[in-house]
Image 1 (cartoon, helix red, strand yellow):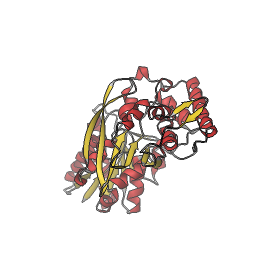
Image 2 (cartoon, rainbow, N blue to C red):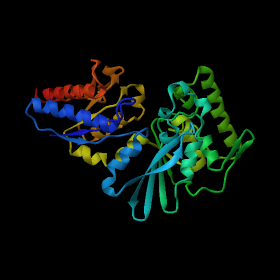
Image 3 (cartoon, rainbow, N blue to C red):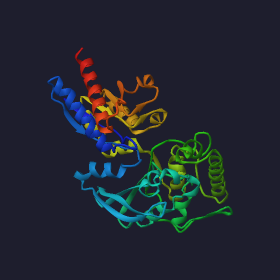
Image 4 (cartoon, rainbow, N blue to C red):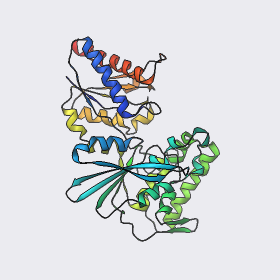
Length: 362
């Protein structure tokens, strides 16, 4: 029996790879207890957030993907080693993938220094400008996990745009314009009740007053762009991703905004692996309302259902566990038993897979 194991990271505790390995151990334990041979296919996934570069680099190694590191600077001014994944997707056409969280990620900012009003995306612009473009046909930028809410202004300025209250002046055409794909981990618009500031700024350390300040700043950015004849769409799904970085990439680099999890699953050949599996197990640190916004476990479930394969979810915590029946066959939360995160996930996975085997045999 082939079991496809496709979790996202368990934020703050386990990477997607570590989670997949723990789930696999739980699956094998439950299978061994019933005298069943289970073949596990580990396929860690991402939605464009932290860990995307590592997952893509590992998944595409058989296609000649290479991973390199460049010296960069993060939003605190500290040195950062930014991974670039590079592969040839068709003859003479190269793709590079970078992860914005490597230089503007919330995880890089100590909790007592988190303040999205104090930081910008400038160091991402510096990283982008350092990429060799001569033979590059596509640059993929993973957006999730940012500490910023600047609408991509810092990035644009680092790439030569002049942006102030008086207007926006574009630099000479960037060689990357129209070649950028932005992997959005959420589909929120830029502005309003569901926008970048009001939904996500509090998670990045903003006070209520700062949230409204950031909302006004993003609103003014849209107005200034439009007054300067710069085409922009603050309502586009994903424009609110990464503190409005989705909007900035679309506006200033002509980026195509795509759902990160769906795009990445296609990139790593997930459909072919689902077709060979009897059951799929996914998971993440917390299953909640944001999961439904095209996060990785939701896209894994959609892909599996397209192949009529059952999907089990094993998660750190589950919000409204009873409401996921139409998505997952079962949702199993890790027990709060005092053991470490790896053991809890392994135990929960053994319980989930064992339960599925029992239902299957009944």
